[in-house]
Image (cartoon, rainbow, N blue to C red; front, side):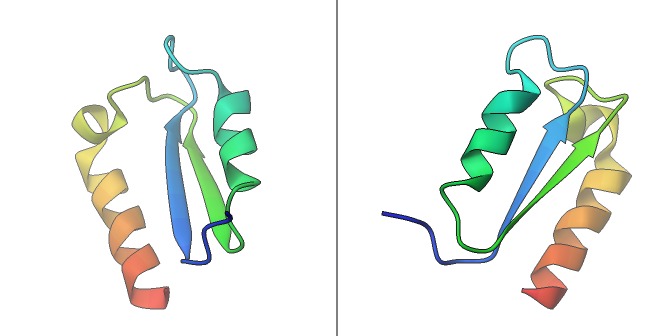
Amino acid sequence: MRNPAPTLILWGGQDRFLETHVARASLQQCDNARLEILPDATHWLHLEHPDRVTALIRHHLSTA
């Protein structure tokens, strides 16, 4: 079953544990999804770039 809810996927471009193709495949499970890759972030993007992550989440919530 596909997810109908507006979905934001945040991904670290330098993630050593999960490759970007996993995020792109996740988009296929959603009807309304957007992938935002932070190129210089790792697996811990919320700790490395808290202001950027917060801004992206706030924008997503205000437009969803």
